[in-house]
Length: 223
Ligand code: GLU
Image (tube, rainbow, N blue to C red):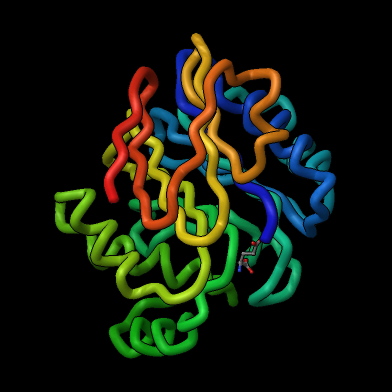
């Protein structure tokens, strides 16, 4: 189980995501990536190895994005590769997902989705969740998220972007930590308290079975 970071607020998300990922490095990991909500939709950058390789991939590119998620991966399902690094996109690109933990029933879910015609680009258990989110998405976000989560066995913390929601960072937690930190600039979320310092003036640990919708100036919780 490795690291999750997410930012929504008034500022450019990239420096917050990169600095958060660096604070998660001590946990060990094999690859890193970010997904940004921009005026072009959802943009994803990934690299194997250290966060500094991801920084090189970001390079001089300028992103206009106040909403993003990031991940340091410790592979449990699939080799260390750029394809297997997080974030993972759903098949139409509506959702970008980072995940800590293991989806125990991923093989059965993957076979079912493959039978239905869904194509996979990675070997991860996480991509199953990304495709299920898209398949279950019926315009009502919360009921779609609940429909997906009900199908998943195992432990998971997810940070999710939805292309249709440029103002919302989605969080889901079961048996894997997620903490929401608040400051005057917005919200920083992470799987580890270390990554929220010194940003957060207030923090909330999510409870098991909870979904949070984080906007730049508010959070709503659903059980
Ligand atoms: N099971 C996922 C994978 O292999 C997430 C691993 C992690 O927690 O970093 O990609």
